Image 1: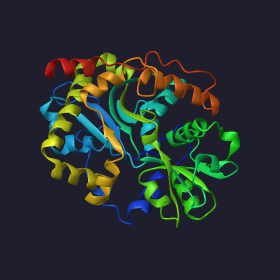
Image 2 (image 1 turned 90 degrees about the horizontal axis):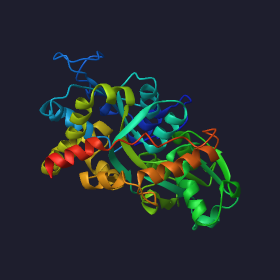
Image 3 (image 1 turned 120 degrees about the vertical axis):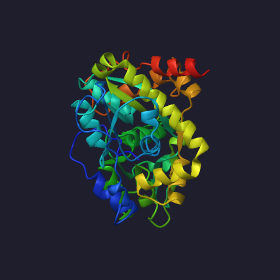
Image 4 (image 1 turned 45 degrees about the vertical axis):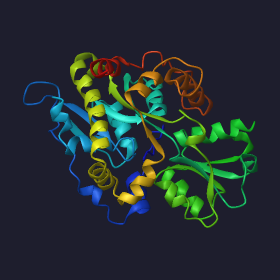
Length: 348
């Protein structure tokens, strides 16, 4: 579900994902693209080049494609699957795609680096699929003092680790932090090279293969700390607001469709993930898909991580702390809830 990383170095997500869930992943043969790489459809309207990758909160896009929901909402979509999440982040930053499903952390990181991006929708919150997994001799967060803890630097799982440490009055200086790409971090933990690891599903499954290993805490213990969104380039939003609205409408229509067609939807999403339906259902438990009402609430100002404006400020501080941003990024213009509000108004 995400190397949900903030760093733009070369990654091996596809290789490690394949290793983690199957030697021969049938998901590789699933079609996604509905259009060519052209910027307009046959009707002359802008085609939305939408990127997504492996995370349960984003698999509904495959349902929208397979079940013809985009067409029902009169939007032409070039749906692009990325084996590596970082590839999708870089593609949006380079404007090779118009929209992407990605974390709040990554969006703020891109904005701090000069990208002009807009969050128009909350797909989901991680409610357990991002975990800090530890060896059998570690039972409390304070037990992490002096231990080797691996995570991909700058990722949401690194952020989660720091939140857990802060809760017990600790900082990264109290542990021996080992920065490793997510797949490598999980492998290092299984091999006994580190004492704890911060990873997301499906790498959580891989990490828990170490005998005696267990979850110490997860994203469910920090509500709102890891949120995922539909993010557009500002240029596309300004030039094509009707298509953006149609994408938001399509998302909520897809959620309604999934409620009424659970078995078929789960089958589509499990195939896209390259896992069994049973495995997918387990992953889905750790992801909270947001309703219209929850979207509206999330966009409002608040004083905890369930408020996007508040969370953005906290994540900005985190980026500065770990050296991924020279100064606190300006997040005042990255949220645009008018499309969710319009959908709510139409369907109230």
